[in-house]
Image 1 (tube, rainbow, N blue to C red):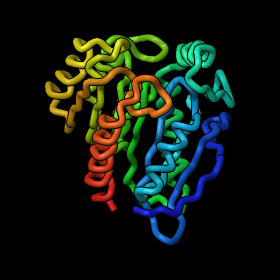
Image 2 (image 1 turned 180 degrees about the vertical axis):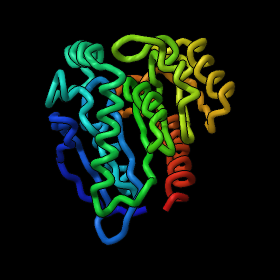
Image 3 (image 1 turned 135 degrees about the horizontal axis):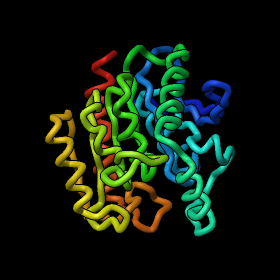
Length: 248
C-alpha cells in the first residue's frame, strides 16, 4: 500500500469523442495494474473520485471515465432529487455498445501510461456502474471485476436488447458481485438469477450479500452501511491483489 498518490483530470480519445476522466496513481517509480472505475448515475462525483484515489493508495493506476460524456458532459450530481432525476435521464440515453467502446478506449488509454503494467486490468462499478462493469467483464482485457448492486442486469441492457445477464457466458476473468438483500431496486429473485447464471456458466466468481439497501458502499447515501462497506472493500482488495498483481 502506498499513501502518496497524484490525481489528474485527463481526456480519453475515442473515435472523435474526448471523454473526461479522473486519474489517480501512485507517486514514484514502478509500474502498477490498471483499474477502470465506473460511476453511479451521478457522474464522476466526489464519491467516485474517492474510490479511484483509494485504489491508487493500494498500488493501482485507477481511472474513472465520464460515461455520460455524449449526453451530459461535465455532469456531477450530489444525490439530491434533482440530480437523481437528471442522472436517470442520462442513464437512459446510454447504449451497451457505446459503453463497451468507452471502457475499451479507457483501457487503451491506461496502456499508454508508463506507470501501467501490461495486461493487468480490472474494473469496478457501483449502481448503474455495477451493471456496466458486468457488461464490461465480457471484454477480453478485463481480468477482474467488482460489480456493486448493478440494477437491471437480469432484466435489461442499456439501449435495449436482451438482458445483460444473457452475456454471462462471455465473461472472461474473475467477477465478484456485491448486493444488498433489502435493496428496493434489485429484488432478491433478480439477485438469485445473477448468481445462478454465474454458477451455470462456471464463471470464476464470488458472490456477497449484505443485509443492506441500495448504495451501501457510499458514505454519502442514506443506505450507507459502514460494516458492509468495510467488509466489501476487503473483498475488493483481495480480488484485485490476487488476480491483477499475479499478472505483474
